[in-house]
Image (cartoon, rainbow, N blue to C red; front, side, top):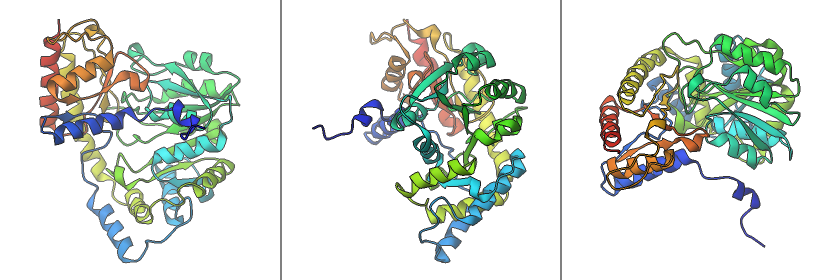
Length: 400
């Protein structure tokens, strides 16, 4: 009998993590590499949050906690959802996990049966389809292309829903595109979902606070209260609070679902890190003013990258509403050849040649379900971004 599970053969390792690791290895070997694959802010965790963690350690808050979160953190999450989103939840409607990824995974593991489908807009975060497969479900896709700034329409959503669709996964602002749905754009989607009462909504709001210019974030249950009883609102402290390594994500939804997710977690990881939970309490309850300052930096970097990429013949880079990614199309470069004779047949060939020739690491678009594109994270220094974009310009100019 085979040693490894057949389930494992259905999934692939995370391409974004693979790119980050490859860039780190090349750097360690002495190559001049600029890694633009990481999905995390380059800011440090705010001092008040670090101080709360240290205080928790000194107070001996280092033991097991309730499986799905301490009461203090659940209360802070309820307060945040009311304050920011106008949503009312009780603490028994909240689950805390080891990052948003575990929360999403728990929900899928707790609900999916063979033959059931999860509808995912493309481009998508690389982990969504594989988590669905691991949970025994079938991922289906609806494509939001360049012409709609990587957002899907109500007509597309309606056409893609089948009797087997159990979940619709929604992510705004988006990883990988940074695209954010306005209130009216989201209302058009929720109107469709109201016509299909068998479809649940899993909304990944991780980039909520990273919203720029005039874009105003909104979440499905806020826009359409009629979806409240079949919506799981997922969020976390990783991105806005620069706490990616602390691993705290959370979700709010119907009690029965939250209880089922807790059951999954109780037999896998048990509680999230106790110290990280206390840090997250401070993150949610403490000062929020640093977010606006960080966002000013992100907007400056976004504008720098978009301007330099759009100056390249063959590349089109829409200006995103949020997150810290751009997702340029390289359609105009397909079929061209590098000076070394490598033909750019697709976005993976482009990303590989770019890394080998210039030391700039990006993630190819096929990993996110929409090609020919590539994702750049601009969560790094202005100097690194300017140098990386200059190298990309030089590389593209060398193609013939």
